[in-house]
Amino acid sequence: MAPRVDATQEAPAAVAASETHSAVEPPPRKRGFFEARPHAKLILVAAIIVIAVGAFFLWRYFSSYESTDDAQIDGHLMPLSARISGYVSAVNVNDNQYVTAGTVLVEIDPKDYQVALDQAQGDLAEAQAQAQAQNINVPITNRTTTSQVSGAQADVLAAQAGVTASQQQSDAAQAQLAEAQANDVKAQSDLARYKALVAKQEISEQMYDTVVAAAKSSTATVAAAKASAAAAAEQVGEARAKLLQAQAELSSAQTGPQQVATSRARALSAVALVQQKEAAVEQAELNLQYTKIVAPVDGEVTKSVEVGMNVQPGQQLLTIVPLNDVWVTANFKETQLKEMKPGDKAEITVDANGRSYKGYVQSIASASGARTSLLPPENATGNYVKVVQRIPVKIVFDPGQDQDHYLRLGMSVEPKVFLK
Image (cartoon, rainbow, N blue to C red; front, top):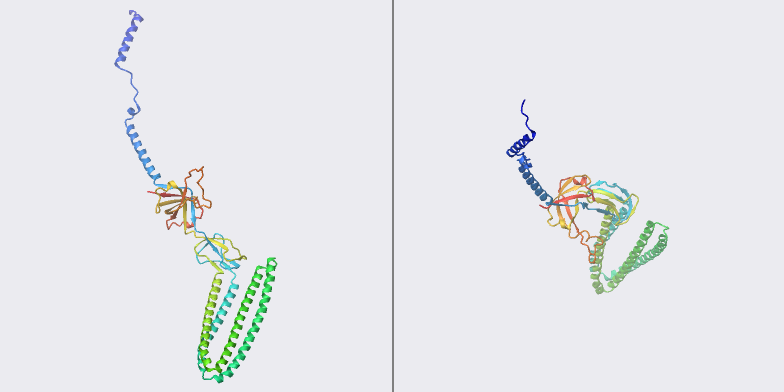
């Protein structure tokens, strides 16, 4: 049987052995993150460098342009108006229809203006015939006056007959003048009556215009009759002068040059009348051309005229929008214009179709939108608050992008102007 060992004697020995073992081998220490991953420091440094480089390039990119959402498509609005009055007989276009330059858009009834042209051409032909006759009379008068000196006695009888004939012509001219004056009195009376009727709207404006034209024509006829009577009276005086010239050869010879000068003056007056009638014909031709309103440029039409309207000169009938000549008006803040200048490249994004277009800054406005408004702000007050102003910048599109099929005036866009 083995000897029994006391537990109290065994315990100190075990404790001593345990303390000796702990002093020789300490417990293992937990390693740090970078100790456990030797390449983590390199990865962290590389990540920091990448982030710094990316931030630098992002800063360079975002500082290289200025953008705004306060921008829209802008362009020309070309209103077309009537140059004459008349009845609209045809409208050859519809709203939003694309037309080319030279297309006949609206037609005004040309009948009245064709009649006016025919009358002007007739007046011109009559004036030309009279001028030709007056030019022929000049050499005839010259020869007649030179031959009067030698035939004074024979000319007395002829002069007496001429006085009688001239007096008859003068009497006839006076009768025509009296008739014209009577007709004018009637025409003026009709005008007064029709004026009262048109004021009450009992007759149409067109009928009243006809009466006004008739009254003016009657007044002109009176003036013409007075001129004819005066000319006839002048011929009576000339005939009597010829009689006196026949009685006194010297006086007759002295009055000869004056008669020639008178004939030449009449010829010059006839030539001036021809020029006046030519101008009237040209004006009538222009009025006839104005009955057709044509498109001055290519573009889309917005019309405000219908068949049956009676238009007046200056009345707007259509508006043409040339979509091939549009641009962007961008209202940049004044703080964004520090480095912006004409010629800078731009990129325009259109909200309607999401497409982007290339362009460039053409010009920068000389005043802010607030300053050019109808009621500009008045800042000379005690409660003034500084507000960042916006300056309009005109951006035009680079050619060859086919933007006229998509862009419309007033569309919202977001331009981006590159400064560097």
